[in-house]
Image 1 (tube, rainbow, N blue to C red):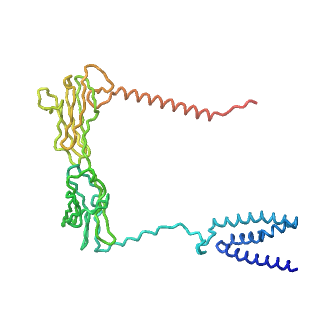
Image 2 (cartoon, rainbow, N blue to C red):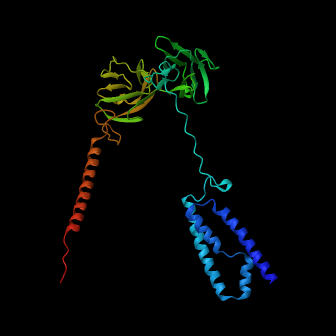
Image 3 (tube, rainbow, N blue to C red):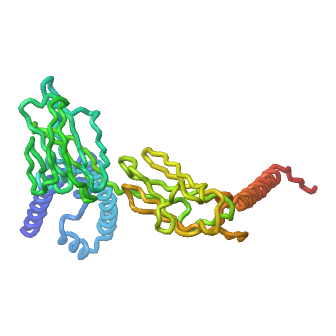
Length: 371
């Protein structure tokens, strides 16, 4: 009798402890998941001793019920775990709550411009191209500056170059220029180099700072003769050499043509030599030599005032027909090659079209069944 009462008291205490644990575990779950979890815990064995006692008793009915309870327990636990997908843990359930991913705070809103606040003129150019060795000028136009200051900052290394009219760098190539009549603040870079290319920030000392970015491109003008390095022409035809000067902020002051490193004279006894130059964003110079002779073969050079020399070697042939031969003048390809290529393209196109037509006709033809 005493042993039975002790066992009952132990079971009651275990059940009470388990009930408190069930309540703590289920507090963080949503409604449906909490109910399933409570049922699953209720059907689970009280403790290991109960399971061993059932085995000793060899109670077949209890063993079957216990096995069924295990299977039901697994199903209910799976259902309870699926409730996690719906947000099973409450974010207010203490240290065990799953915290959502941190979301960065939105940037502070920009304070709207007042009627007297300084601002940048948006029409100021944002891209500037300068020639190597020449001065580069970067400008920002500030309206309503008031008692604020304007600074120029090199964005590559966040180096303050100028503040108002003062220079804050040991590189004396940088200088600030203020044009009061136009409200322009100009950063001058003397003897610009390739390393000077990049973004520069014109900044107003407001809170927060207002910035206007200008990109500097430093270019080296290049000269190119079309058809280089070798051109072939027939004897008696016209040699037409075309020299193109690119990436130059301004057209070259002059362009000299050389033959065998000697300046070509346009009024020589040979005659038939002329030069046509078209200046613009891209400058083009044409050297025309009529009635080509064998002595006109050799190296020709185009030398602009603001770019490196470009050269080509001309071969005047007496009846030979090499692959790179000009037809009539330099720079023109052999037209017979273009004709052959065009004929081959037309042939391939006709064959492909015929194949597609036959394939479509074969699919649309009705099938005949033998009866």
